[in-house]
Length: 107
Image: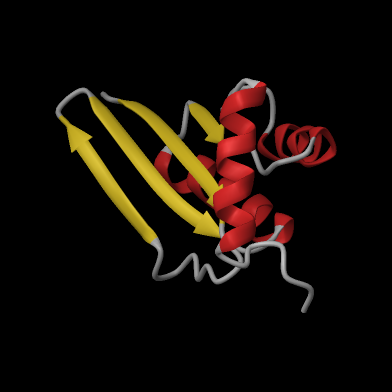
């Protein structure tokens, strides 16, 4: 048996069916999915928990506290939900790059 983890990140141009990968060793499986919306994240996480037996979900910093609570509720109490967060200087660096690359452009 392996320890199964999902990493879920946001990108404005994501297609979760295409933007995914699996990295595995005999004892570890890391499922990576990139999503465009909270709705996609909930659906993908529920599917991974059910189909792949995910033990832990790691979310990118783009998920709000409300999003995290919704995901935790959606996947149930047997899967841990974690969030990657940075300090203020790191957040400023990333925000500058994301702004420059058009992540926050109004659609």
